[in-house]
Amino acid sequence: MSALAWGVGSVIAIVCLMAWRRSLETNAARTERASRPAALRDAELVYMERLFRVSTPVGLVAKLDRAYRLPSGVIVLVEFKMRWSNQPSLSDVIQLSAQRRAVMGQTGQSVASYGYVLVKTPAPRALPTTHRVKLITDEQVVALVRRREDVLAGRVLPRSSYSQKACLTCAFRAQCDHPRV
Image 1 (cartoon, rainbow, N blue to C red):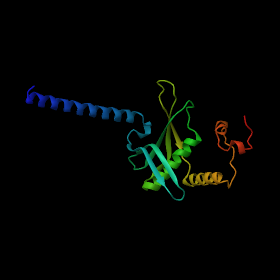
Image 2 (image 1 turned 135 degrees about the horizontal axis):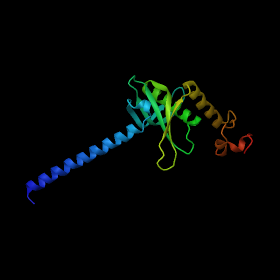
Image 3 (image 1 turned 90 degrees about the vertical axis):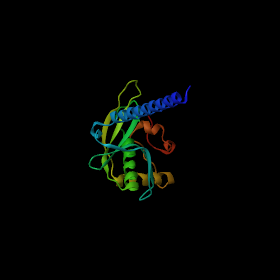
Image 4 (image 1 turned 180 degrees about the vertical axis):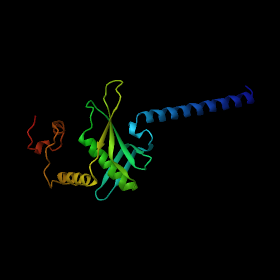
């Protein structure tokens, strides 16, 4: 093989590799855009699978699934869940609210008082359903963190959950006076 033929072959291979890589990035971007709630179609993806920390007024560490910046500059949080129950839960709202507090505390950016929970059932070919949820306030997040600390330290007794399913896996089940089902 001549040096010229080898050089041309190498250039062609590099161009093909670059085109293939660009195609993968384009497909990934298309897939990401298609997975967004409709209200975020014109938003910019700013954070994906990112950890945020804040230490005041309470310590919080939160890992976001996704965060989008609206044209107005406000950040909107999105949480992905896979489960059979196709509805958001209170724990989803608390999780997004803690994420909101951590993002605002670490970055100083404005984060919406609502977020989205995308629930996909494990059924084959099931499409995710988008649920817009109203987040709890920063004060409520701080109160929950402080209550958790008090329960873990034994300063206050735990309360029973509104959810019987949560009671089944609760670490304080043995100490709880809630009637069991």
